[in-house]
Image (cartoon, rainbow, N blue to C red; front, side):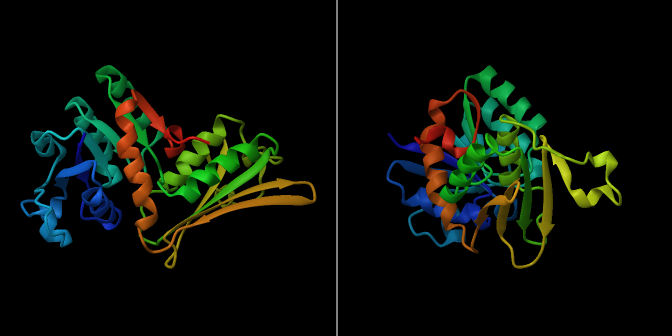
Length: 266
């Protein structure tokens, strides 16, 4: 069986790497791409892939006319939710790689997905090292009450924190809120320097040249600490295998599932 895939954000940094991975996969067909800046062109021409004749359109509504089964959302936070809901209502299962969606957004997406009996698999990051970091952090949170997250990204990333960190904070909230020995309202000095409280976890976002995506999860105990760190390089290649796994798995789901590990065996 060949899965017919629509890729939104097909010419972007991560999307173009995934497009090449889908094109090479024997069990997938990249039937349509979405990229407003290249609408009307051939995706094969834009990505220099001989044999790929998928057209590029400007919107999710146009893409649905090509009959995709799987819709992969890899665009921007300002259009992601609209794309996802349009794809669900058009009969597609959806994989979400776009960061910046809130818990309220995901609640709405889950409700629609269950209404139309389609699956949504949302992963803030498809890299295996991130999946492992999330699992290790969940293990640590069961035993260590004090923790904070530092979120690093390139200087022009507008969403704070990253989707990877939002997903991690959500996961940790299902275990416990991180302990604050001094409440935020009792600190002396600018409260903002203590970061933001996100799902019961303190999060600090850094945006500087030289970073792609990185994060530290720091757990502290008396006379000891545990630091879990993920750091991405400049290539989008680490996200391709996880993206392909998500495409192959999402049609088995109904409703929203967060995290690539929800379709992986540990």
